[in-house]
Image (cartoon, rainbow, N blue to C red; front, side, top):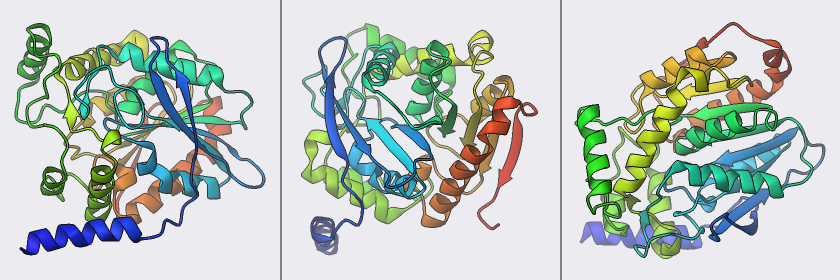
Length: 339
């Protein structure tokens, strides 16, 4: 009874609590394979300090990051984003509506290339903020288009997958076998179709930083199930392993020549923090910050950590001219929440 009452009160709070953030300007474009991809932008008022392209992680959706966009608008940055194919308000290639399913991360990269190509003039500098999976895609885009972006901020980037209780070789083999033996459009173990009860019950304070933000997203997606994902397919997971292997290759990562801010959570439950450290050591102009008490999706963490993250992003942009001239390789900045 108490659980049911709590859920009803939570739904009412999300429905009627007024939003203090500016609404994005939505748009769409057609992908190379004729999928409808949803986009959004938030324009800053007054003098522009630059442009941010925010690239979401797995299962992200535009409405979930309005707070971040508004904070960056307040600092003078225009913010652009898109819902990746298979999630949010973009079209799917599977009939399973809440299954995140793709065949290759190449398709994500092509969608981003199409999105950039359709834009016109931007306030410089142009910075990509890549969150988790978005950081992986960002690195691949920058490799293909080295002069189109001035800097990259990689938040808990998916340099490699944290396979948790499964040995890496076993996890990758399972993904590959399932993908090739008829399970390509099956949910990865531990995931299933989205529903509110499951979403709420999966909250874990060791994995997700802010309970209120997490539950607010659950309730929002329950009332906008066309935007929801319940989890990835084995095809997505196999493609993720392949894409991670690509960006970890020395010949690839050593050619990322723009300044990079790598933001790492040492206890990350989804991606491998050691792989991030190793990658940052190869990228010529990479600076790494450790958020010792953070959680994977730092933009959904507690307010103290989010405020520090906004400060670190702002500082990176201010330092960009000197960083572009060259900095010592892989500066490691310890960032503790008690400072």
